[in-house]
Image (cartoon, rainbow, N blue to C red):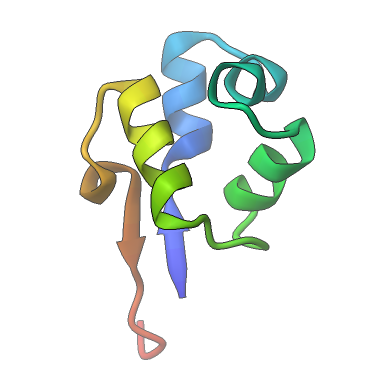
Length: 68
């Protein structure tokens, strides 16, 4: 399972899902799905999010062991 900090980073930057989506070229629904762990982004999308937030991919996403 993959967890992420996208919602937290959006709150820090005070931007909406739509703002992020527009900036990286996806739909608001894509951002919603990523935030809610319904969609695992491609490498390209993870890198775009990383660049947008100024964080490494590892700072935005982490693999969670199913035993946790």
